[in-house]
Length: 67
Image 1 (spheres, one colour):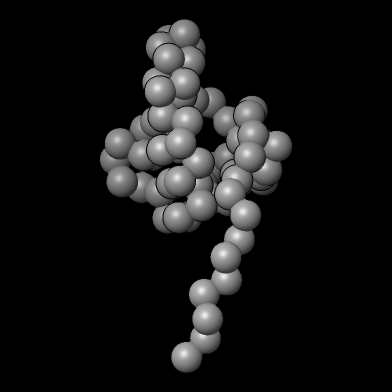
Image 2: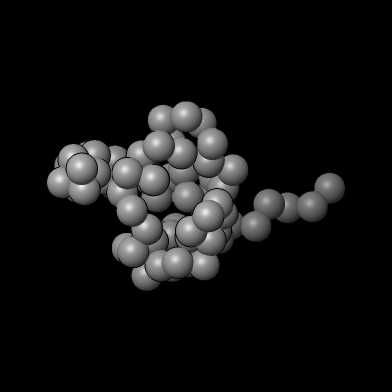
């Protein structure tokens, strides 16, 4: 059995690993999009899920401003 690879946490400057914004720096991905995929359980990347959960309050606040 293979040992799991422990990758570092994602940061704002890392590329989005999935979805229509794949490859875009996370800081440039619309917060409304991050919130949508998180709330609708569409996040297929554990690292991205952790990034969103870590920054959830800021993402929610910024998403309100994007309306």
